[in-house]
Length: 300
Image (cartoon, rainbow, N blue to C red; front, side):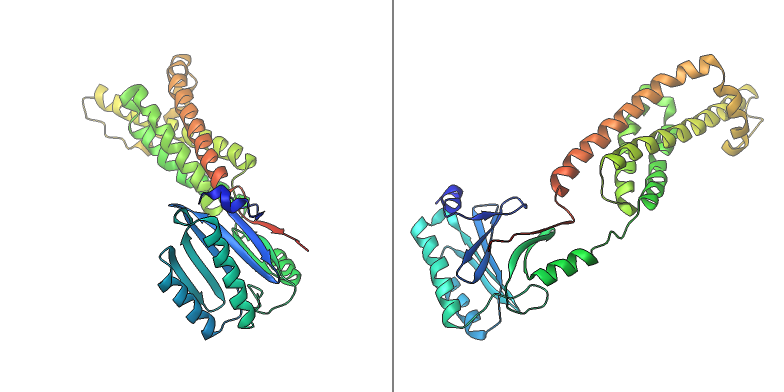
């Protein structure tokens, strides 16, 4: 049996990729397609030892069932649908619902563990079975624990790693521009570390912070060059620290020759940082497109 054969059973799609739900009589079943031709059939139900025994027998007597469990109120059957035909799959669903009825099992709210009028819902990152009251409560109580300001601070601080690399290896020439990749990674994940979820504002903030950290790196790179230049001109008789040469940096940065020499390095490094941030955002958006989303599927 192919995936499309299962979808032809008129499964109801959810906003989470490869997750569907099926309502049979009063029972709500969540179906999730997984790698290697596996399919999980899940639900939240009242717990009974007799139901756990039924699932154990199902696992023992059916070679296509990879796992069958009842843990507290979580029911699950994981099977290999590639090895089944459509009739076998439909029989498993039918017999499961018949067993639930015979054992007087009810679908229950994922949070309150109580039966009632329930609906499948997309809660943050999971598909849950909830009542309207639980859905409203969870949605109301969901508050971001992070703020944009702390995200900016963590991006700035973590981005200093890229600044240090730019300053420390500036003598390598254009190769130092590769530090822009590290800079982009540090500011992107630094923003996510203590900040809100990444969006367009987060991208702009990461780029701006990358530019700020890069300028900090250039200041220290110039201070290191001044220090090395003074040490060479005085035949190693003058030993100054980087912080002692920092006050001299503004005098060098206003010279046209120095600025002209710096611009290509800064531009290429910042360009690599921006490209890195955009690539990270592409994969982040693909993986977190629906994160922290609350949707109630009202099938009645």
